[in-house]
Figure 1 (cartoon, rainbow, N blue to C red):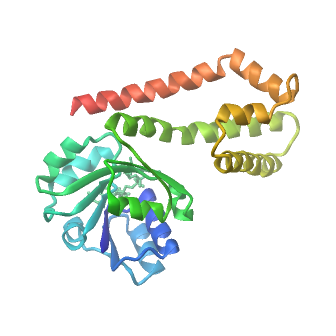
Figure 2: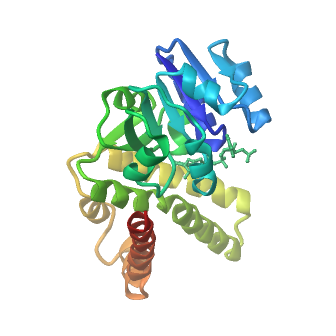
Figure 3: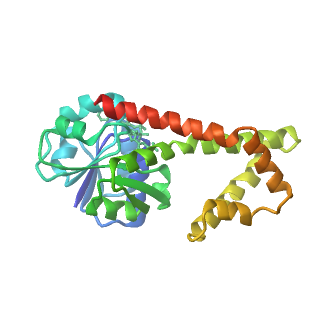
Length: 260
Ligand SMILES: NC(=O)c1ccc[n+]([C@@H]2O[C@H](COP(=O)([O-])OP(=O)(O)OC[C@H]3O[C@@H](n4cnc5c(N)ncnc54)[C@H](OP(=O)(O)O)[C@@H]3O)[C@@H](O)[C@H]2O)c1
């Protein structure tokens, strides 16, 4: 199997790094030439990686093609390409629905959408896929966990949740800044908080039978410091603000879906 990427940016670099690190069985990986520095870096990693001369060469020479350009240029890029019937197309392009992709492509291909996250590079990703695809499922299972969606509504909801990355780091930064106001140097604050959150995430992954609420209660002494902090955060609208932000992103995705 040959795997190609149209768009050689941040997420392509992460996936290719992951595939190589996982030793995923491929006959070759072909990346598009634009973003020369990234394409060159990837080609230098392994003789399995080639830089195509243009986007069509990626599509023409590969069994599986990842579309990894930004939504703003997607239509122009995809419409210009000729896909062989039977090609497996994985669109990573946020907000572009499958019927629209099908119209742009205009050939009998298998299309799934996927939302990989940058940590696929470390084989610690969690990738949402819709509709289910055996081949894409195998590829992303090698790079971490796969979540197959049953409906487009489920997929879109996960796309909203994928937007939590920025909020997560914003939350962590607020904590680090607060420690700064209490006299803790930033590096020390980060040295504490990064493993702190990592440990908590690890506990949640390990305790697959427990809800997040179970874990919160398990990590809280009634009337203790954790209890006080969470209650105050909740009373001051912390949860409400987060839910409103998720709703706003969902609305944007829904509008984009209905516009097409
Ligand atoms: N980053 C993530 O965590 C993530 C996760 C899931 C899905 N996605 C989706 O994946 C897509 C790519 O995201 P990204 O973060 O990797 O963006 P990115 O770093 O900006 O990469 C996009 C790449 O596409 C290239 N490009 C632009 N026009 C092109 C053309 N005509 N032909 C071929 N390549 C072209 C860009 O080159 P130039 O730099 O030269 O313009 C750039 O290298 C987006 O649709 C995004 O929604 C991203």
